[in-house]
Image (cartoon, rainbow, N blue to C red; front, side):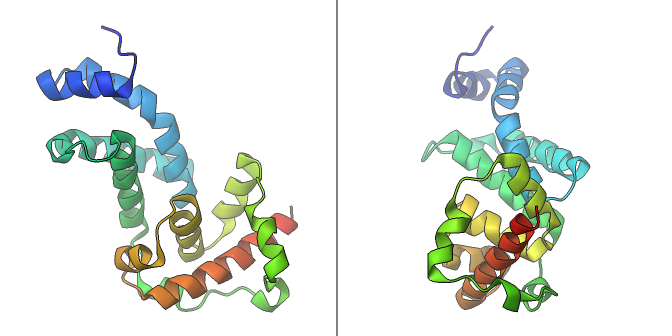
Length: 180
């Protein structure tokens, strides 16, 4: 049986636990979720592991998806949480990174620079070179659109630490992009 959409495959899987339906969900969502995992984790093997763990968790907890919001958003959150668990983020990573940030102060008019569309490959390479803490903050705040309050809760840091680390992470990312 062919599944033309995630919703059809999801309904079929929830109704009968049809492995073909879950396989269809995997095929439809794995490319996007792999990219999410790769943004958080530095190498392909870790991203592949996180992707597999994401789908295993989704399979086991499919009953907890209540249909409030999209299934893709639900499983994306599982992917982000899986990556964060792999990174074992702790407060020390957000206290001090060893970058010379004086060279990269972001002026208000330069803020637009970071918001310009970069090619995926160039941005991904620059993100991979950042320390885990900076990469995580950029992913959560900019790419996943979490609020500083939500980031603080996820990472067990204060909102102000999240804000200051995002500023530093943007500066470090800017330096990396300028070096390319």
